[in-house]
Image: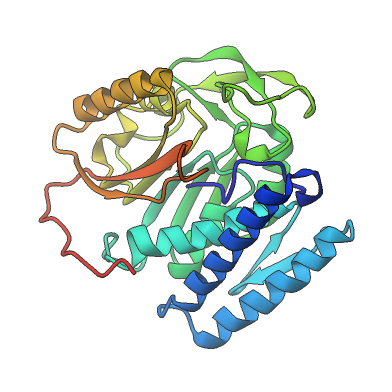
Length: 306
């Protein structure tokens, strides 16, 4: 899904205006968490108290652990904490509240898992879900495995997915959620161990194509089209596709058209049923989640989005 922000993980290096925006965003997520009636009120209040304590520990240079329901999340940065909270809020709004999964034990494919925020959001609302996660960066995968490797029903893979089996240059960012085979224009990647070489694999060569996926999430920082082109067999039976697109430039617009064309080619029955929150500055957002219904079932009923 998406990061809570696209800025550096430490607020001490941000301009005052950016810090104010992050604080406002954080408070907005707090209110949204409090409004999730599907979670017990005691859990919601406890989560927010934990969040405050974790922020204090991060500010003092420590890396705390917080509970997410019956699960535990090792927090390594402000960014990963914000991303966890935004994933919980957005997953509830986009999938849980409209009851799009329509069952208690969904099968979920998490491509671009980062350190496990989306996986934890899924297991929070669907404790008996089966989640198969893929994360490309070996260093980020260590945190993903630490956060999710012990959870029943979760299988994490340290595999980079693409359209073919080959070696490619991977660009690391200081905010791990922005690392990608396709770096963001205008962002510096030199301060985060720079470039590494990773072997990409086609998903069709890893998973069986007989499996039915209730939800497939692809968030690989601009590399979504390549992942889709390497997964045409595996994903043909998927029911929901949650995919991130990049915004804000003519180059990204052309890439998005290619991505839409690929989705319509692989899934002729696909319907766009949900647009997530635009991420980034209000006047120039950088990315957005799109949710496609790939089944031929009736469209979901409209619901209050407040």
